[in-house]
Length: 188
Length: 187
Image 1 (cartoon, chains in turn green, purple):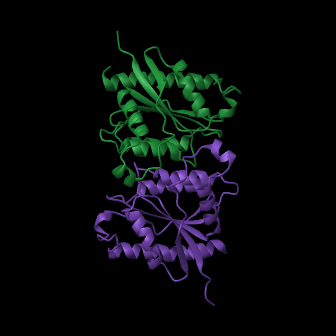
Image 2 (image 1 turned 90 degrees about the horizontal axis):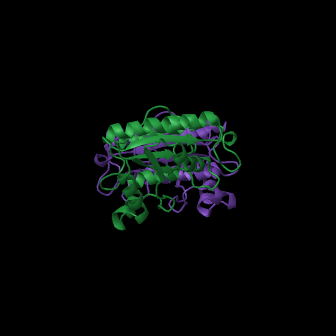
């Protein structure tokens, strides 16, 4: 009997009413039977990256905590909005800090990416920038299906529950594919 | 009839003291043509990580300062390293905040890009990502000359003065072109 695949999810938005946070919350319900998805520790308290801080006061505890959680996980799902056609600064700040850790946690880590936006493209511009950053970090980004949840306000209800069937099916398909991918890469 | 002086702010994407990009940014006034007045942008290091809930309650003072400075300037030069093949978070975070201020000031703003990096690509991956972001806010981007300071450690001395002549010439050429570009954009 195969072990469970344990995945952590990271959200790229901080606001309460975030569609991406709502999607992140919904993921455990869409995961295949052999995969559990839990929210990673937060990055909201990370200071803005400054190498002088790293070299004097060291890594903030929250950075070490998130790094450890990523290392311990079999895979990571990043669920994020697109800000100005690219990666939101807060999420990029988390990545920039984590990337400096000894035993850099994204190395050889299976990663899946999802994004929800108010406009029609669903984060299509941002995801290719995020893929590039992950390539540099030697992560293994899951290819297809891609998850772009465009016109998000029409797909979630006013309780921020994902209601759009097509989106749900795509997400389930990605998560099922991601489980196989994680097992293939980790040998689990 | 002499041209009026143009005011340009210089925004640096690195926060560390020993930054090559910060060193280049500091030296730009010395390399600039006579009628291009360069000044550093207000600091970005105290800007909190973007959260729309915070912005809805009011823009933090450093965001207001940066917004006003960009708005008042005739042009903007961004000098930035590349972090993880893309835009450094402090810079992107600052752009994210300012982009959501009412009547965001990047719109139509003549903008030039420079980067210093340790290796062969000189920050170019970051610059093409940054162009994409600045397109989103409809900045008016100078295309050429591009400035990529490759193998930066060899081009600055141990007092962080830029000493490589080819690089100095490349930077001067961009600044000359940028002045013309701003004047043309202003009409």
